[in-house]
Image (tube, rainbow, N blue to C red; front, side):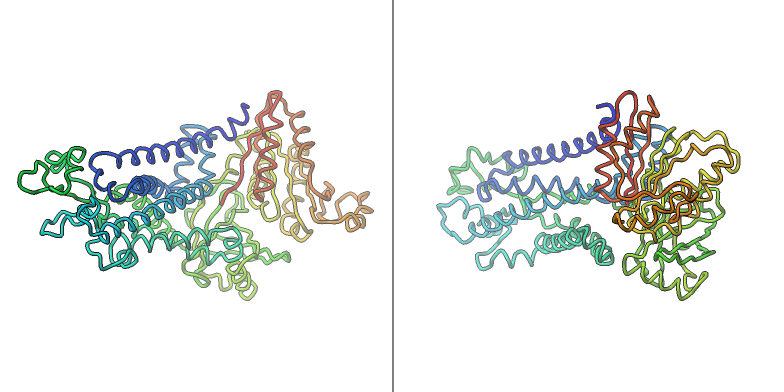
Length: 562
């Protein structure tokens, strides 16, 4: 239970607070529109009034939040500050920024659907109020207010010679509502994982419809379609006393003057202006970094269709495990893609290994093949570096690193840093033991990383630190008969696939056994578990961390998120 609190407690608390605020706003504004001010509005619209306005309040709150998790420079600054003044647990929550961004987006979608559905009923009832022209109906009397020279009105549909569709496309609220709804639909549907991974450009471009979304959102309330009785009118005209006398309102001898109505001033801009300013500042920082010169010192095309870029930029400082966003103007002037840094802070350059999996990376790879060293990559823009969970590796005495495929990249930086620290004779490294697991589908993925492991293996043996790093490499897609050919070589000193002394394993790790063994070797220790890999593997490791945290051992789970 203690480990569950350490791993998930603060995240759950944040989510509960967020849900609680949403619930509070919904109930609060639902009840606000049940007050006397809105009595006559409800006479036309019924409960649909509250059902439209309550989610609108929640939309304001969530639209205020939606931009904050993607202000990566702001989050990077906060991460460093929180680590210093608070704790790793608090800072680790910022690594889940994209998850929270998605949750807020889903909440926006839900409240938008409720808001739209309720307003569809509202428009129909406003229309009915004009069509049923019977002076004995209070809905008609209320709808007719303003047609006799009185500037005050309640029903925004001013004539019976129209329909809700026309109103939708001829009013500020209607037009902006349609625009922001279409933008939201495109943003959400293009964010599905199958589209994001296969057609990233579609995802990227449609996501930038958020600019149109926020412009429409700010102006949506300026039409003041939903109107309530004014404070002055309420003092002269008590709706609870005058509702049954609606046929004599304003006539001689009546103590109930005709009620006056006004719309609420637009409020959405007050909710979103702060985050919008922060996001503009974020983009200005990115623009500044875009202008900084990046020198490509080396381009390496690995046979496994992995492109290695080595770069330099004035004033660039990094920590092990961080990542950057890369833009190539000759491919796209707008697209930025995140890549983990594979270099160590001790090196005089920074590097990234890029797996070729989409249109953008394919074009980058082809340019590298055609251009060779530097080649047509004369112009790259770099934004970052930014902090991730892997930054915290050296804050644990015992560390478990799990990389899947190209997901090994953040740990390349970590292991390189270990190599430099040991070769330079540094003895103040807090980390005393690293367990490294690399899961690969095919042997080609080993090519660019094996050299580093061989160097590290030799360095550790030479320094008498052979027990510092325990690594296990798994070929996950090999069948038994394919692996049998290599087993005959296991009597050799080095593995025939990787060239390492540690033999390659086949299949997938038995995580239950691995965690049991690690826990038995390190009683009373906090073990940091770091993953860069698929969500399914992340869930499996998170469960293992919870189930094996006993006997004084705590497994703290950390996952890379982009």
